Image 1 (cartoon, rainbow, N blue to C red):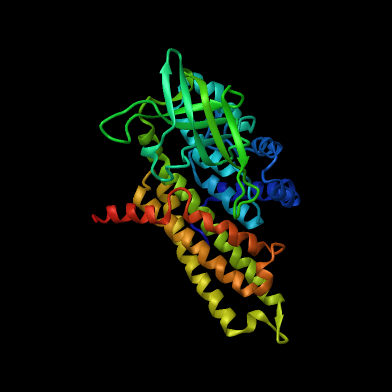
Image 2: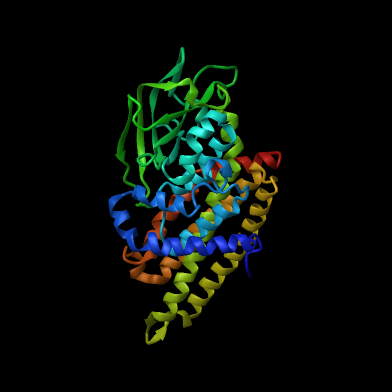
Length: 381
């Protein structure tokens, strides 16, 4: 079965992305994994071909599209090529939407052109060492003092934190009757005094993605860097979560599809007892089962992409597709690695890296357990 979500314009863009990855990423990816981050020049090149600012209005140097499906195409082609792009996806799918929807005119002129061109890369800093998914319990504070805020605190697990020029920091600026009240979004810029970055955290997978600890020690953030209204961060963050979770579902589905393609090639080439591995009944049944699950995931994902396009994707439906596609990714990649035998455990085989990369998709953007809570609430439980 083929995907029903994309039109001719998306497929034309797919060819651009595929060519870009083959030329600019695939030949260098092994070096980037060893270095632990993607070089800044890549983002400049991606911006030049229109991959970074897809939803940024044309008057600010972007593509001016409202379609998230172009972002999905990039994610799918990245998985197909067997590479990753560091903090790219967080920049395009998660952070830039906040700038587009919340910036005033002065901020748009100051930041949007650079975000679209790759001159300014972005990250978002929510998670703290002691809070995890409990955003309302965060300890980072920003106290208003005249024309600036005094920011103090620390964040961890920040994707793209080392390459980022602009970091949207969620901080407590006040108190309210609800624990979720009093949180605000402040844009911290590279070079601000008191803003420092810790080590590039070593992870199980996603080796080319820089993941940072960030520290704020009396950082004077201009009041002009407040994004949206003071005290409304929780509402802003909640509004963008369905798209963020849909983006993670796309990556899970695309990885599962890539793992199946890769393993189909392997089992037809690999000989066991003088016969192709793919000729054994167990291989056939395992891969057939993976194919069925993948088709179900693709149908669910296509529907979610269409709902997002129409502005109808609910938080519960985004949670459902994230749960299914990320659990699918882990199941399929695990089965495909098993069919590779001992070679599947060797890092020279892409399936080994895919296995390590898959584990985090059930955690970030909201754990599977949190997603199930959202779904259960929607069921009236």
